Amino acid sequence: MLEVKTEELTNKLEELNELLIHEKKSKVMFQEELLRMYTEHENLLVSYQQLESKYQAISHSKLGKLTYRYWRMLKRVKRGNKNENN
Image 1 (cartoon, rainbow, N blue to C red):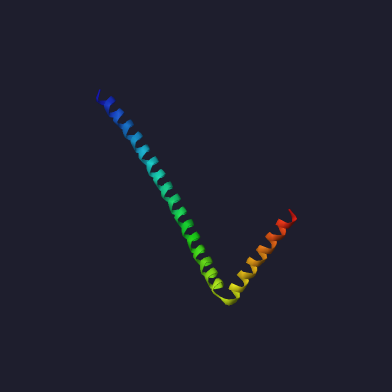
Image 2: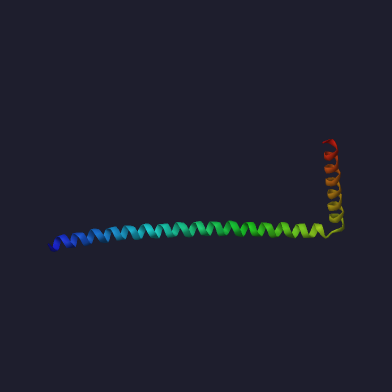
């Protein structure tokens, strides 16, 4: 009878140990995925800040303002031509 209980406890202990290992692997995989997502988000943020900086530099320069106005005028002209064809 003592052997049966010892064997049952040993089996239960092995099951719990396997479950613990599985949970730890899941936790590690989750943390790796979270780290990957964080790194990706951080890279996107840095890229956005660089683009924003370039945009601000261009939009505040004289030639940049002139170019922006030219593009806006072209857009209006093209849009006006499309409306006339329809």
